[in-house]
Image 1 (cartoon, helix red, strand yellow):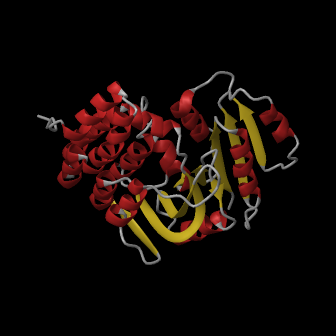
Image 2: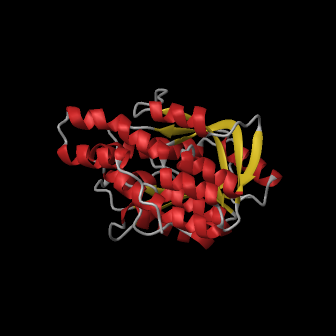
Length: 300
């Protein structure tokens, strides 16, 4: 069984090379890597791929910049095999990643999503974990001894209370991914939105404890800058209020209530607020305070 590893790229070429080398180092060689370059301005990248001489690797460069959401959607369109991964261009697969995904898929072929065990590293490859990560893993992630099949309102409620997934480490049943797709207009919460949409359509997830992936957290990442400005929380608030209405209509009142309250998102904004105050980021202070303290607008 061949695993499709889709890698939407726009960023640091040195980290991209580390990501690609980690795929080549897999113990199970039955994979295909497709890198979709969204026009990052560095001519060394296509030249480096030309020199790899690995027929399992396909490098494509978009004629025009599609943005993060658009490039993810293009990657989904290029999937050919039954199981696929949407890997981050700065993340690292440990050598047992592909073999672990295959093992879980063979055991639970009905599952639409697989979440494996993940280590967190910083931009230099050192172990790194934020307060938010620790809270999500200790407070929100379900207890799993080895592996666990989950789905329905139970899983939706758990993820909305605190999104404990690491999206680039997820493996997907390809037909489930094609049938749902990313919601347009989302750049921060698109991963959670996709998973919730899959759960609403009846898909399930296997949570596997075996660690086989390294997820990179950058201290000065685009998402952290969006957090400082408060922009990420504007998108999160809009999404949570929208999905609360959809969950209510679906009969998942507990999950809908968790979406309306979005407590972990509010607490996250509170942890960022002191930094915005320290930097005298006036728009950020306004957006963060609004997100953290403004009363919830309950849908009619």
